[in-house]
Amino acid sequence: VPTVGADKMKVTFCTDMDKSVIVYNFEKRGWTQVGPEDDWNFY
Image 1: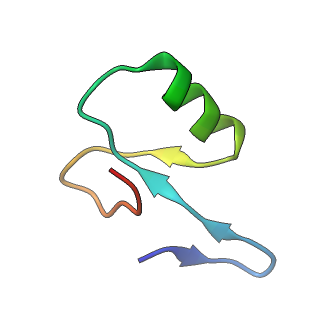
Image 2: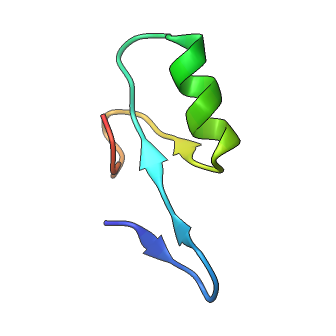
């Protein structure tokens, strides 16, 4: 479940591979990488 702030939604993602292009693009969008045991929006 995304965390909703006053002006923006926090998107989280989890990956089981280290694909630098994908991780870079997600982080560029302001998304936060989390572990598989955490809540995430994209896998």
